[in-house]
Image: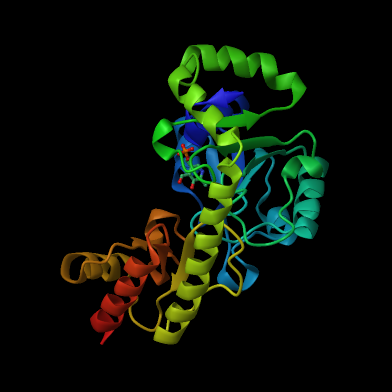
Length: 291
Ligand SMILES: Cc1ncc(COP(=O)(O)O)c(C=O)c1O
């Protein structure tokens, strides 16, 4: 089903799948709107703290620890915002097995698929055909402002999903849908792949530059366009750190507190959605600020 952005899809799926009091297992940090949608439904976001050493993805042991009688779903993003890390195939298999054994529906936000820098990035449907998938034209296709996304739902949920869509937004904008057809024209993929290559180059540059300055970055960033970096060497408060950089050094990065509670004052998210030239300037400013 085509939706008004992945956001429209996430909102629809929250309404489709949750009742007040239901629990949903999520990683902390994660894209913040997901937790907010769960709250809006009167449901319970069950945050699983995930750290740098585990690539910011939950283990099966953690699922077992956090899963409770009221848990109904496991909602993840791969690649993830804010961390850029992915759920690799063996882990995805284990997580889906756990979910099936415990009656949890699996929702996977695959909005950064296409913008990945690793050979094997499984779609959850390869492993769990009954999973719910969220995706969008906002990232790989670079059509963020057109507000167009899609969801894939199991057969048994289609009718209810259509009824909800009729009530919530009727449809995605038809103008945007016609515009998005251009993404499938000959030659379009070449443009998207050039963008992907540019993102990969920026990722490589930033990972090295940030480590050299003293940030701790994940070993691998396999997708999306973010580095979620530890700032222990400089500050114990990511909000104050980001505010100082913004106010006095002309640098816009995001405090971890936007994405969760776990260690969130110790991390910042740096987006590489700008040119290499600007990234180099940013790194110079950062070095000056830290000096
Ligand atoms: C993980 C994730 N899901 C969903 C969205 C929302 O995307 P859209 O523009 O398609 O609504 C974003 C936007 O940044 C995101 O990072």
